[in-house]
Image (cartoon, rainbow, N blue to C red; front, top):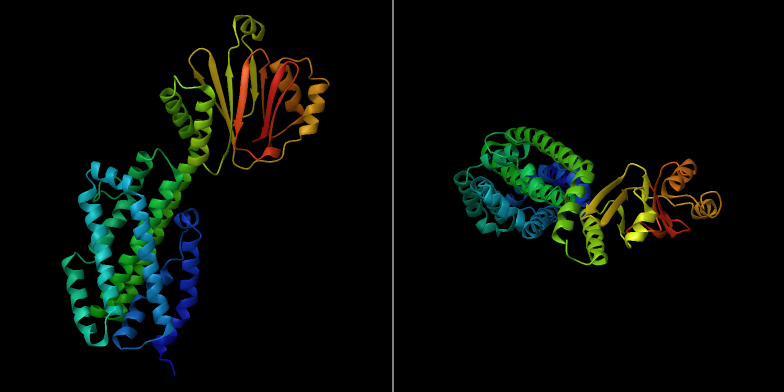
Length: 393
């Protein structure tokens, strides 16, 4: 018959499975999640006690395996984020951050050594783990990591701001870094709770669970706020990125530049659909015919950038694309809007197309488009006097 402690671990298994499912959903879900991690580290002390009592069960093995899965995921992310590590070193934050990361990893490793030790070596591994935890600063490492995320003065620059600035507000890299920190926190708290249980007893361990459950929720809330701010500021960042890329590609072929720009935008801002229209001169006579009002845009979600005197780029976007009523637009363009200039066409179409961005360009200008929108959600056609682009906002 199973002991009360075994039943406790068995009861926690379902909650731990839910935590591990969240880990499997990827960085976007895990980075912005608040709450839910505590079942993972709450099992640290009960599992340790069972192991020291030489109790073997599938639940104990399962929990230990999940701890190792988290460590493995942390190893992978740390390798992927080496550029950020270089920036942390450049900002001279590494004396704290990397020593803390190394200490937390090693404290966890010593905890795992106890779980994996043969019965005759368990007491030796336990003593080594306790000595190592004390020598490497104990709980102080977790406190430094907490300060690093929360922006407390003991650390210096808030670590999330360093990452956000260095990566030019790259949401996906920021999410990966947040996950890395969460995984590191989990390892550190597991080691801390094991130490508390072995040196101070169950009551002290429960107090630490409460304390760090609260702190980790504060950290998660801070992470979520930082990611949301990063997402909301994407139009501003996209404009900076577009101008930088165009400056770098000033002498390049327009088609190639537009393709590189679209590839860049769809990779960095992958939750958004993008449409790029490139407008350039066809010659002096055509320019005169096109006039000053050679284009007109109706809508809010677009950026306009000039490249020299002869080329204009209009970049528009939508995070929730909807189908475009192609036939209605064609009927308008073959009927009342057929002979209109860019301004007249846009004014007629916007009366029929609420919630859509509309861009008309004179046929006396050379223009083409590239888009990451689904085909049914993006309209681009050449008509008598103008080329027309339509997509939802």
